Amino acid sequence: MTNIKGSKSLITESHTIPASFTIGFLGAGQLAKMSAIEAYRLGIQVAAYTDRSSHEPMHYMSPMVTTGSFEDVKAMTEFAQKCDVLTLENEFIDSSVLEQVQLNSGTPIYPSPEGFAKIENKIIEKQSFEEAGIPVTPYKQIHGLDDLKDFGHQYGWPFVLKSSKGGYDGYGNATVSDINEAVDMFTKLGGPKGHDILAEAFIDFSHELAVQVAHNGREYSVYECCETVQSNHICVAVVTPARVPDSIKKLAQTRALQAMEVLGTRGIVAFEFFYTPNGDVLLNESAPRPHNSGHYSIEGCLTSQFENHIRAVLGLDLGSTELTYPTNVMINLLGTQNRTAQVEFSEALLSEPNGHLHMYGKVQSKIGRKMGHFTLLGNDSTRVYERAMRLTESVQI
Image 1 (cartoon, helix red, strand yellow):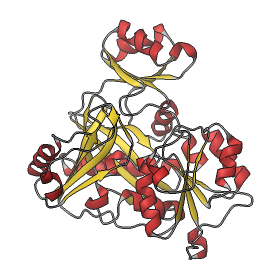
Image 2: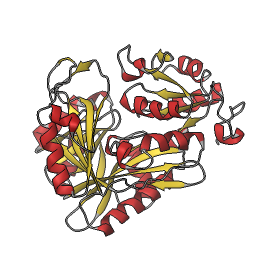
Image 3: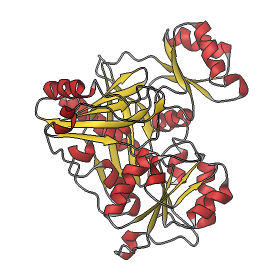
Image 4: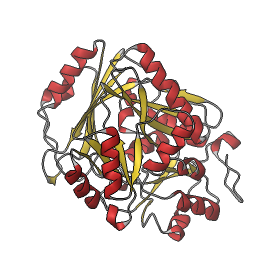
């Protein structure tokens, strides 16, 4: 455990779980909710701190939800003092704030502020992994027109522009095809206002891969390499194991473990890779928390990413990541209309053997918003994938 003046004792140090032990989540969305379910199973209380006013999934999970700014060290410190340990649900916070909250409250935070500082924005993240010898996608920080021109000349068009912090699910990033589009997107992302903007080469990849790694301070647990299927920068499906050669899956797992060792922190971290036609496996991004690509593990592994995240944060022994079925397909259920959420689906979806529906409890649906997921287990990846797509194609939310 990080040596913090006046810090609290974690479960692993006392070998007991007091009924009052509380884990606090910084963020109150579906990732916190699914993690909270696993904490409740262990008899642990849950709390959340969010910068949104109401109607997030955690508001319906716990009476201990605090609303405030992720820049308000005083308010976050007061929240932390009510918890025995804190963990992240998103990356929309600065490591300096985490460090101050941890110091002021005596409450340990995982991932640690030091580890989080190595990946807290996409530019620092690339540098941290590149310095460790892990191949990453070619990148450059963009300051203006000349940088855009130089990057396009060096790596060709199109390429990808990203906000260095805060982007997700198609927000905060875009593919640009020429200098006019690049200038327009640079402006929209706030480049002229001083926001850090990153350019990434457009990688000719055959598959996008992901691996989750858990660390409890003593041991690591590496999940199966899965394949993420993207549309418009949004993950629409995950196939596990990935449909690539075994050697590539093992290489992705090895590089994910190497990247986790760079961070040197407890918790679970997801690592995303590009697999290129020439056999390269390039680390693209990481997420210091449970990740959408690991939702399959709820039914698809002996121990889900959410349970192992809780175990890791508390320093408990990690559970097995062994698959429960040879093939596992997870379909993201995205909002189809801008309206108060309601789920419309066929009877076949619920009656499907080895099918599992998860809705996140979000009150407001928006087109493209992740509202839930459906997991289907089986033996043949092609058949399971096609069946899962058919069952979910008519879902309206």
